[in-house]
Amino acid sequence: MSLCVVGSVALDAVKTPFGEVDEALGGSATFFSTAASFFTEVRLVAVVGDDFPPEHLAFLKSRGVNLDGLQRAPGRTFRWRGEYGYKLNEAKTLDTQLNVFASFRPTLPAAYRDAEFVFLANIDPDLQSDVLRQMTRPKFVACDTMNFWITGKRASLVKTLAQVDLVVINDGEARQLAGEANLVRAAAQILSWGPKILIIKRGEYGALMFNGKETFAAPAYPLENVFDPTGAGDSFAGGLMGYLSTQPTVTDAALRQAVIYGSVMASYNVEAFSLDRMRSLTDEAIAARYRDFQSLTAFEPLT
Amino acid sequence: MSLCVVGSVALDAVKTPFGEVDEALGGSATFFSTAASFFTEVRLVAVVGDDFPPEHLAFLKSRGVNLDGLQRAPGRTFRWRGEYGYKLNEAKTLDTQLNVFASFRPTLPAAYRDAEFVFLANIDPDLQSDVLRQMTRPKFVACDTMNFWITGKRASLVKTLAQVDLVVINDGEARQLAGEANLVRAAAQILSWGPKILIIKRGEYGALMFNGKETFAAPAYPLENVFDPTGAGDSFAGGLMGYLSTQPTVTDAALRQAVIYGSVMASYNVEAFSLDRMRSLTDEAIAARYRDFQSLTAFEPLT
Image (tube, rainbow over all chains, first blue to last red; front, side):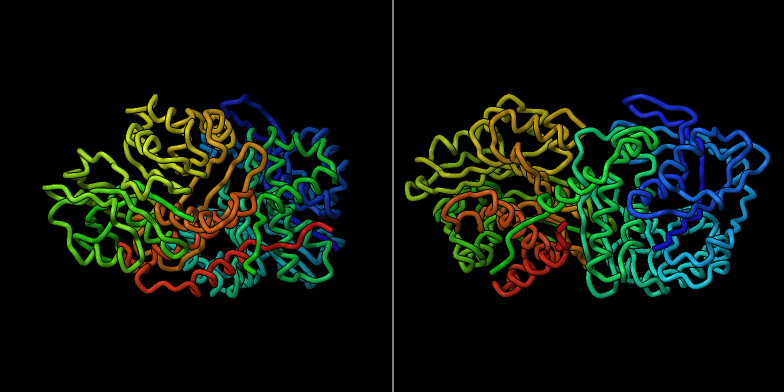
């Protein structure tokens, strides 16, 4: 089924203890749509400047991503510069240049409006709501957000949350959003504002999914070589929504599988800089790692 | 089968955001043997002072713990005072009075020496080795340790590691011991020193088990009310070794189940101060939470 993502396309400068890249393809919508492209066709809504390298467009096209909704604005593309220490668990942002992203107003091409699955990546919650107003009747909407909007646009954000089926945020954001250190209570608080499902990403510790009745815990894949964590969260969301959009109905079982596919895509993405691991990734490798998650988590049931 | 633990028995003063206790029953051997007592009879080796309250002895006896190896020395019992903040993830030690524990020399009663399962809780690695010299032929030996011994008695510790089947430590200790930030590589390093299995405890994030061939990841049980994390690691080890000691052979499958039972016991232990939750815990509640772990982690396999 049809999947639409609204977010950022960026050029990243990233330094890790293992090397560095400059002007590398990045941005939430990019990581999301590339990961999702292994499951379905993705319709992308974002903006780039007139300096955006054509080879990056060619890559997204090669992944079957629909770029009709990618606006080109005069000026420079959004740029992010960050650094990771040896622990690789948190990026230190050194510089953010919003450039054309600062005045981004998502406009959905007519052919996008009937998308059944929608992912609202981390943008201004007012714009997230505006995107939903442009949609005909999405079947399943997910959103991300960040500390900047939690503190700066809280009322708008809570309004967005009331309109989505699924919220995908990290543990720090969940605690901050709910004003509650305990994750189980924070989850209950966030679900009380409207969303049916909350997925809390915990980086190297995996993800927790709450639906108000039951909880699902997925580990992160234990990797010997984490090269660049940039985009892990959006790759997770891409694998998750990409898989879900292939399912006839969004059941609890499908959601659990989707969390595993999200974890698979995130685990591959961090194995190289930018989207480089995605360039050579195969469906077979995705299936193999899904099976690795099975053996990673399996134990004998109580008889 | 027979299970022996060597460690500390202490009186704890603990303060959390939810209350405080003073002179509460604590110590690694206490938490371990109480948790393990739900699975098997435990032989305890430790020392207390002449001030140790008889009601604590009565409690351990009521759990069927064999106290023939509990030495009584003139002087005060080991006391620990700690505090937890709202995040409850790390104890701030305010005071440690080793008292009679400072000159503790474990001596195994003759009837303990044929124990088949042994847990060497966090004590001087030279004493851990000494305990093993007193054993006839243990079938399966596990040990814990801490940063104090990793830095202060590294050579002795590595000698102990070469004699054990299983090491159970937390993630910070694993990184420090191996001198390696990446846990997968740290695990490989530690296993290269002799132990067949390494379990890395990650607090609220669960546990990872490595055996050099495959990895098992268990989540922690997501709790709405974590009251006092003191003793969670030793309760984990107690559930783990208690269950293992009931198994005819230590298979990979049994070890995975043991990790879940350890997680179950740790999750119950943190629900109240000291060992209070253990006082009313039932076999039925243990089985129920084991099943909760099944539903917490289950997802459809790839067909």
